[in-house]
Length: 558
Image (cartoon, rainbow, N blue to C red; front, side, top):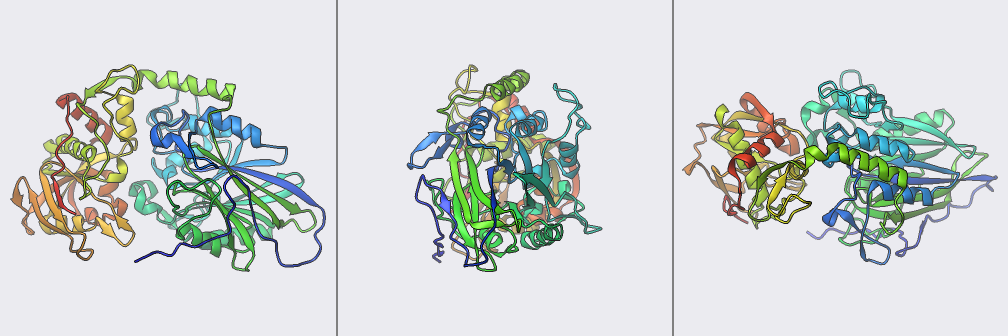
């Protein structure tokens, strides 16, 4: 089925996008200019990201090096004026490089405070270490297990995390501040934050236990009504949800495929003037019509600190509302052709030195690249090796097979040296980049029938997620068949699976809790927990080096 692609009002490449004028109304009074600068999906990338994650398509359509905290700071200083507020749209932390993650992302949150972020929507990755840890990051205090970082007692974020649709399950009351108000240039601007309502299915379930994630639009509307009751009419929605775009799209284009982000941008309370999005790691600047038929700006700024979104508008001093015809949006690529900010450069170097002893430690060897490039059936060499490592880690607990979720494999292992360690050497830092979530391994008992149903859950109406199998598990897929009937010829240790027999299945706690929609895992019995997944990976590398890419023959079919 061909999906229709909407055409929204867009700017030409390299030009700011203007939102069409409102219908004729009463003559506006004097107005005050306001500028917003926004980041989304930073994911702790203090150092300039590398590979494809370290480039961005600029206004000319060229792919240029982009990102890095010192360059973000330099561009923010260049773009800011006296009427500027800096905000963000979530996933600022979580799935982070070791320089940040080793210290529970305190360095990244400190950096964001240093460059003036005043409010951010909470993202799904802010829950990677659980709700209580998010509260510690917001409010301060040392980590309950690892203690204080080398910088001393954590003082808390300088900005407000916002999550209007994150509620306490028992009481229905907000678990996170839903909105905040900032005064700039003599006017008040209200900021509302929401996170994708799919969060419970894409984070470790225990991390959000006791929380409810409401519909984003309903929550935004509640917050907008509250802000209006407080006399605030200029409103910005920071939403950790978005849409997909064509590959290679320029930063100010608007070729979005309508999805969850467009729904929120179109349906949220018409009092909301601007919708700044994230989550999908795409770049776009659009104009959409609100429920009252008035245009409002809807944009997103890529990921990893590669793009800064600039939004300019004027606020009527008499009514306190945004003059919609004044809205302008512009995505700026964070190029590295400018002098880096010296203070932030020094800050990053300090944390780099603190973590270097851990990061540079060799833990194994490989004979060739281990990548996430899938076979036609969806199997990858690196996914297979990780599954084998997890099986080895849980063998003593009776594990017969292991399964790894593809979304948890975050980087490739390349044979070429990334530093001075030498070709083929795998360092702890490189292994961490592959598995940064600190999930705990576990093993449960499933029947053969449950295993079959579990493997059928690799496909949903939202797409597919092919589980990576250990060498002891093989199966065939046929994508031409209906969802729910695509897996056959399942074997464990070379023997056909008996629907009535039981099998011990190893996986990380994200999957075991039903993550990524694999709910059959929650039916498992006799759960036994093991080591952290990264520790299991490290132990396997140390015990089995050098490791060669396995043949991609565990999953057959296409």
